[in-house]
Image (cartoon, rainbow, N blue to C red; front, side, top):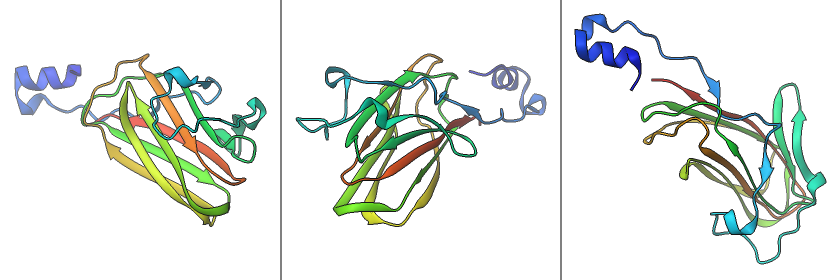
Length: 171
């Protein structure tokens, strides 16, 4: 519980003047590490994963991002420890940009888990136009600093995805 909330409970609503904390990144895009099959919780993992280590990594595209080129990486789950805590009621902000999507008709799967909780889960139609996807959700769980954050992508076709934001804003 935040100190301001504790003071509100002790001294009443008149003592509550705290402002929500600024948006903070849950991740550092330079720290992602690939997760092996034994530790990957996503059920759509194919029996054979085709993923070159050169197909993903940190990229600066006017801002920091984590890029995945699905032309040489059809499935990837990466992990890192959370840089900040998340409390139930906090806003979770996600932004993902992708190029025009080519390939046979179907869908790609993008997801983020925080401390084992599914925080963001989207399906994107393939083929499709390039797009910036921005979504804000309200967390219904707590996650301590250092909890595992997973970013997952499963796609067919030769496409590029950039995870831009994975942020938390206090309530």
